[in-house]
Length: 156
Image 1 (cartoon, one colour):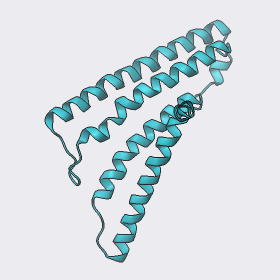
Image 2 (cartoon, rainbow, N blue to C red; image 1 turned 90 degrees about the horizontal axis):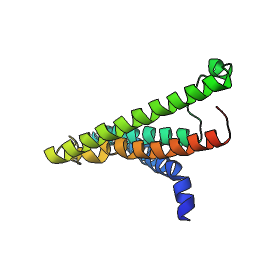
Image 3 (tube, one colour; image 1 turned 30 degrees about the vertical axis):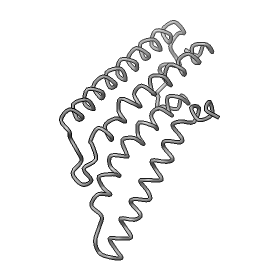
């Protein structure tokens, strides 16, 4: 059961976050037209949950090797050059998400130390910002898994 949960973690998080976003937006639309009083906090929650959704989707794309790639030139390169390009691409990906983890963690720590809260609901800003370092680590794990599988199959 736990193994299945971790295998589909991104889908579960994405579905829950999307359900919350759609529900909140629906309630906002209904209140705007029925009682002519929009709920201002819904925009704050929806926009900030969108970050969680995007990061979960990015992790899922890396896990399924479904991220956008332009491979026309890459596929026509000799196998040795493709291997070099693959290694360089892996290096850049790990560097990018490693930096994103470090900078995102730094932001979350700063927000906690400053006691930063959101404007509408006074929720600690770190709750929303935590998506960046959290999913950056998950993305690094998923990328490592995909790169390992890609290498094992010899698909440079």
